[in-house]
Structures are given as C-alpha cells and as structure tokens.
Amino acid sequence: MRVIKGDTVEVLTGSQAAAERPGRVRGKVLRVLPREGKVVVEGVNRRYKHVRQSQRYPQGGRIQREMPIDISNVMPVCPNCDKGVRVSYRINEDGSKERVCRKCGTVLHQITKPKSG
Image (cartoon, rainbow, N blue to C red; front, side, top):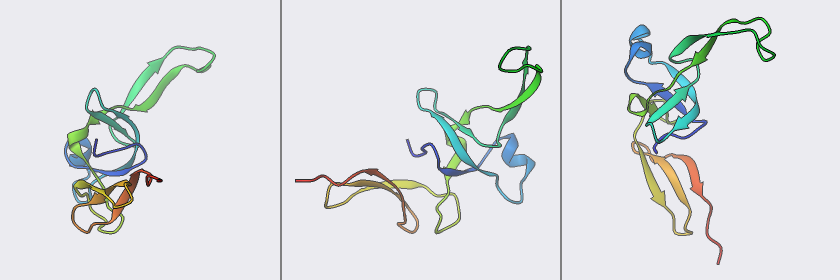
C-alpha cells in the first residue's frame, strides 16, 4: 500500500475535495483497510451515527464519525515538496527498505531496518 497509518494525505476527489476547491483538504490517516481498498482520514467524510443510551454513551443522541474513502482518492504529502506526490520504494545497500517521494527523493518512511550480518 502506498499509504500507511499516520501519513498526512491530500484528498483529491469526492465531496470533501469539491467543498474546498481552492486548497485541497489534508488530514492524517487514522486507519487503513487494505482488503477493502479504503482509508479513514481525520476530518474527512464525517457522518452522523445515531446511538442509543448505553454505558458508553449515557446521553445517547448523534455522534460524528469519519467514514472510509477509497484509497485512490488520496495522495501522500511530501514534507519537502509540500504537495501530494506519488511514492516509490528504494532498497539501500544495507538491506533497509524505505518509501521515497518520486519528485524530490525525500525519504517518507523507513519500512524495514538494516539487516545485520
């Protein structure tokens, strides 16, 4: 997957992107659902859920929750470029694997640690 939990992503399409056209919406990835091909992004695609009174929700009523959106509608944000970018993978000489920005080559995340021995 090109997006992992904790990434800052930019929403490209959908109702959230159309609502704020001048600047694309950015948010942090809360959950990745790889089998469904979806991600949950903080502050994006919020829906109301009606809940009954319970110990967890003593008041009951409506709560807002972020719902999943398709992974093809988001792009990771490179801290150096400050834009949504495509991601590639690089394997270093020491055996470590990292995700890198396709435009500038900045390391976004270290996937595996160097192999010893």
